[in-house]
Each structure stands twice: as structure tokens, then as C-alpha cells.
Image (tube, rainbow, N blue to C red; front, side, top):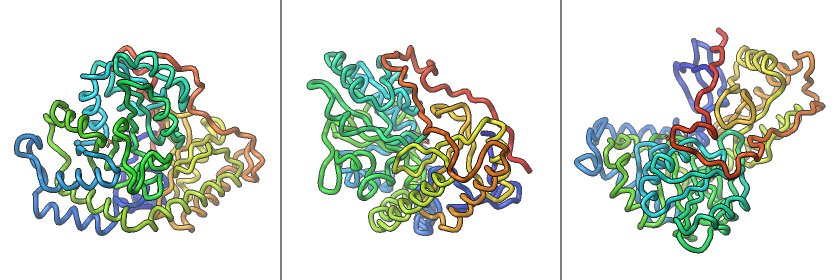
Length: 419
Ligand SMILES: Cc1ncc(COP(=O)(O)O)c(C=O)c1O
């Protein structure tokens, strides 16, 4: 998708070229990027700390905000220790740099976010992909390489279609010996699980009062469910402390600004205090899912607030996308790696969307589809749920961090928003 320079934004609306659109894009799942308490915490943080620490945390750039967030995240995720990193991407890189010393082989889901496969490849580990969600293949590969030290890595929730990693089953197939499971939970954190603890909680691997096993590590962005900025890795002290001690991507960089970290602390408090937000997210997800299904749109079955689908050929989808914008709705039509096709709708809903906005989007979709000669919004379309994998990539080995074959980064540019 071409860039859309936003002029202003709330949790559910954006203004682009002076036009106000109800927005169903992005990953502000609980709306916390616009929560008044979070914004107040950021303002107070600016007054207290200024804008930047201007130095690595390991020299003079550490703050109480970072220290406290680490303790609070470790408590929330039920892990021994947590390290806050500049972004989610660098959380994966830092973990890779720590793991590569003792673990030589990475077994990755073929549809992992690029930061995951990049992290382990850049750290010098051998990287072998298993077919998407295929626990048996992951376990077999892990068993083959356990003597060298092996790590299974997966996204918790795959952003391209909302599919959810079988985290418990992946944990169960870890071979005895030197083996670990890493879950990049950028899209599950604050979304899945009884109280937003994410994919591990969703699968009963951890939860309130139930610590995460010391062979499991979680990485996440602070920029999605928490609506802030930064990243974190959490797990056993032996590995998290090693990342703090050796990972140059952490030690040699300026941390996320302390004011933003104060925002993340406020956001995490809200997640724990206000379960209503998660309930609203789930209700909105159900409402949109039911409505899209009524239009005959086939959807991947997932509880995640992510809806990936195609409605026809590229030209037809372009026309639908434009009609939606004319009607005041942004439903992103994207060309992004890891998706089911070259171009697809990837619609997300958040806790702040009103029923009127969701129903408005559905009505706009119905109208836009009815204007297409071959489509009807009467539920009679025959589209099948899209798969993001053909299951052909098992056993493929990346030749280095520059190998984009499993997750290409170059995508065609799409036309800009119609004015
Ligand atoms: C699965 C996944 N991992 C890592 C990242 C990187 O996180 P950040 O944007 O905080 O660097 C993203 C997206 O941004 C993501 O979707």
C-alpha cells in the first residue's frame, strides 16, 4: 500500500488530505495510544526526564521508568526477568545475540515476522524453516539438531491473517536437552489470554499465578497492544541477563524515551485494571466477524482482531477500496510480505470502535461490493478462507540475514489514496 500521510488521528479516526475517515487499520488493539491516562503519563514523563536519555542505558542513559517497567512486565508475563529494548525488532535481535552463544540452530515457522528470522540469522545461527503452524515438523527438526542447542521460534499471532501459534504443542515437542521456545508475541500481547498476557496464556502455558516455564521466552513490541513505543524480551534470568550483558543492539543504543516508557507503564496498569477493554475488543471482533461473514466474505477462523481477505481480482478490490474511502472508511488494501496473496484487505478492529462505526464499515462494504458486476453482498460468494502458506517451505534453510526468500521485503507500491 502506498504511504498514507496522516494529518491527525484518534483511536478510531484519521484525517488524510483534510478528509476524516473511520480507520480500521493499525495495531492499536486496545486504543491505548490515545488513552488520556497514557498521554498524561507521557506528559509527566517529559517534565520529569526531558525527551531523550541521550545515552545507552549501560552508561548514563538508564532511568527509573525503564527499571520499573521491566519489573512490571516480568510480573505481568510471569517470567523471572525482562529487558526493555528500543523496539520490538531489536528485542528479537538482542535475544538472537544472546542465544547464539549456546544455541546453534534456529527452527522458525516459515511465516515468522522477518525480525525473528533476521535476528537469529544475523546472530550467526543456522536457520531452518518449518511449514506454517506444523508442530510435528518443528519437533522433528528440533530433535535432529538438539545436540547443537536448538531454539524453536514462532510469532504468537501472525499479523498477516491472525493465525495463532500452537504454543503449548510447540512447548511439548521441545526435545530433552538444550532446547528453547521463543514466542514473538507482538500481536498477542494485550490481546489474547484471560487478562491480555498473550499467546502463552491463551494456550495455558502461563497465567496469573502460573509462571512461564524457564524454557520459554517472549519478545514483544510496546507499540501495539500498549500503544506506546519500544520493545521487551522476557524469560529466565539466565538468558535475559545474558542479553543485557552481551547484546550490542541493546548495549550500544539509546533506549526508548523515558516519557514513552512512563506511557507504557500507565498502559500496562490500565490493561490490568480495566478488563472491560479486552471485553470490548472481543465484542467488536465478534461483531465485525459476523458482519463480514454475512457479506459472504470467507475469513480465517481466529479470535484475533485481524481480518484478512480478498473479494475479487486486483482491479475490483482497488475499486472497492476507493468506494470505501469515498464513504469515509479506511479498510487497508495492502501488499505486504507474508500475506496470502500479493494484495489483500487486512482490516483490524480495536476496543474503541463504536458499533455504529463497525456497522457503517459493513454497510459501506456491502454497497461497494454490490457495485461490482460479479460480486454480491448476499453471502453467496464462493471465496474460500485464504491460507498464508502452501506448506511447501518445510526444511528450507536461510542462507543469511540477507536471504529474503521466506519473507520478501520488496513489495510493489500501490497507488496513493484517491483525493
Ligand atoms: C511480529 C512482529 N515482530 C516484531 C515487530 C517489530 O516491532 P517494532 O515495530 O516495535 O520494532 C513487529 C511489527 O512492528 C511485528 O509485527
